[in-house]
Length: 459
Image (cartoon, rainbow, N blue to C red; front, side, top):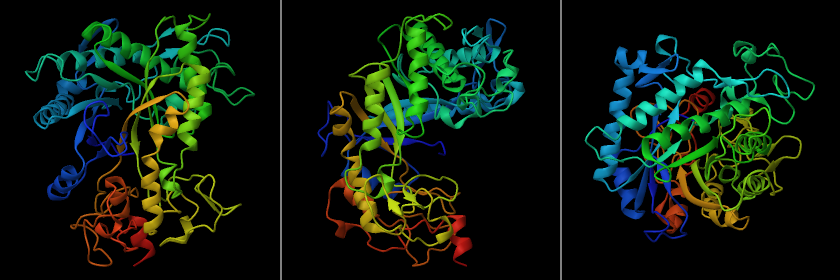
C-alpha cells in the first residue's frame, strides 16, 4: 500500500475509547474533514515512513554518509521525518516509524538482502554488504532523530520493514536472488518450491527475519535494552500463515542458536501485521485471520506478545489485488458468509479484493465494525493487540486503484458522479459508533469512483 502518514486513536492504557482497541488511520484528509474526525475520536499515534538509506550506508565495516544524503534527497526525507515527529509532539501524538525501501541512489540496494547461505544445512553463512548498508542506515536514523533538538528520545516505536512479503528479496520470487548473494545454489527452486535453502526455512522470510536482528542490535546500541519497541514481521496480510511460520522459525533458529543460523539469543516481543481481508469481506465480526495469526505465533514463537495491526480498512474494488473475498467457484463473500457475489461498477473485477463491499453501504459498515472485534479475538488466543491503524482516511482523486477511505475522495480530479465530495462513508459511522444517519447511504459515495478503473468502465 502507498506509504503516508498515519494518525491513530486512543492509547488503550491511558485514554478511554469505545471498544478499547481502535487505534488509527492513515491521513490523506482535507484539514476540515480530518479535524472533524479527530474531535470525535481522540488520537494517540502517528505512523511515519523513512527510507533506510536516508543518512548512512556502509563502506566495508564502516558507516559513512549515504549517497542519498550527499545527493540531498536522503537528508530531505529525514527532515520530513523530523518535521512529522515535531508535529506529533505538538499534537500530543506518539510517533511510530517504519523503515522502508531505500532511495536506490548511488547503487545502494533499494531492498537490502541481508544474508547468504552455503548449503541446506547452513542457511546463514554471514551478512552481506547490503546487511551492513541496512545496519548503518538504521543506526544513523535512530541516532540522528535524538540529536535534532526534538528531545533526547523522541521515537520509541519502530517497525523493521514495511510489508517484506511484497518484495522479491523477502518472498523467494526474485530470479537469481541467492546467486547474487554468493550462494552456490544458483537461485533455483528446490522440490518444495523454496529458493535455495531448506524446506524448514525458505530464504525470503529468513532474509526478512535477519533485518530484525540487525535493527535490534542498532536500537540496543542507540537506546539501551528496554528503551524501545521494535516490531517484527509487518506482513501485508494477517492470514499468510506459511510466510509467518517460516519467518517465526527463522527467528526461533536465531534465538536458539540452531546450527547453521545466526546466533542472536534474543527475539522480538512486538509484532506488526496488516489485515485488510476481514473488514473487506463485509462480514460482521470477521476475525478468522487475526486468530490464525495469533495461534501461529503461539505455536512457533510465544504467547502474550504485543501485536500492532498497523494497516487495516475496508478496501473497495481493486483491479490489482486478488483475494478470496469473492470466490468465483463458490460465489462467496467473506470466509464464512454464503451468498451471491456482489456486483460492483465494473463486473470484470468482481472477483477481486473489495468486490463484496464496493458500493454496498451496509457491507462497509459491517466490515468496519469487525475491526472493533480484532483485539478481543487475538486476546482469546493469548496475544495482545494494542494498536490498530486504519488505512486510509481519504483516497486521492484520481486514485491509483486503491480506496479504503473513511470519506469519499475530494474534488480536484475526476468529477463525482453525484456531485458529492468528502462524504462520510458508513465505515466512519461504524468506527465512531454513531447512528448511520450521520453518514451517506449513497452507493456512489460508497464506491471507488475516483479510480482509473471505475472511470474507464463508466465513461
